[in-house]
Length: 184
Image 1 (spheres, rainbow, N blue to C red):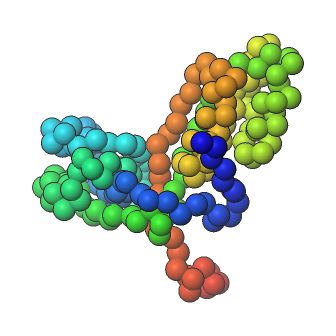
Image 2: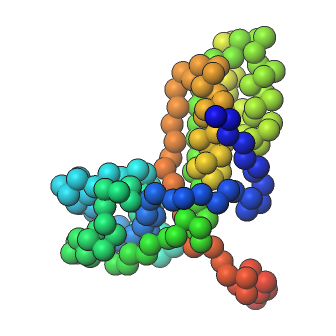
């Protein structure tokens, strides 16, 4: 089955979502991430993606957790998370009403005669070549996770030497009124 998608500003396909995106605001202290991820592991919940970084407020971090919907009932997850002392706020982000992004970096086999084809994929997906060697290229792509999945599938036919993805980060989409307001 061939998959085709259009990529551009907010043109990602509607699909059936099988995951929860949780945005968890926590105190930025040693061991917090271990306690949060340990909670999921102890209960047998499958974490699909996990990303953490400092938040907009000093001393706080935001953990974005993408959880498999089949393995984890949302209500139970949030109750367990709120029991952790360092958790300040938990928000569930509906994938249809949030902006999701991820970063992919991959080293791909690319002999001199194959470079043009790989360059073509890089151009189509608006990726970047960030390193060049005699028989390989390292490329990066930022975007919606579906776009990265498609790019990775196509790169696979050239031979992926190494690949790393950051995991999803997400924020709620702005409402129309907020997008139209001018910041003072």
